[in-house]
Length: 128
Image (tube, rainbow, N blue to C red; front, side, top):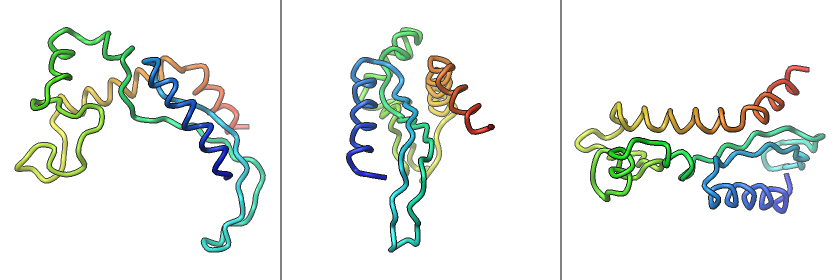
């Protein structure tokens, strides 16, 4: 799809993030030809963009002790929601602790619940 179309999506996601809202947006974008990868031009394709970003609306609903831990530079939730791919919890090379995974899952659920109508519309349109 065209770069300018993707730039608009990124702008919308950033605006939602900056407002403290879940960064989620649905779009129909035209597939452009890409001879290098053998992708033919096609009609519109529907996308549901979900950007894993800080969501202050979600964080405000957390218990005080959890919110306090989010601001720490070292601790069990350091880096949330952008955990490191490797060495988040040394000496383990990969993997998250249960509290890290649970908090990430809770934020994902919050994204979907807060955008239920958008997600339903997107999924039902694909079922037709």
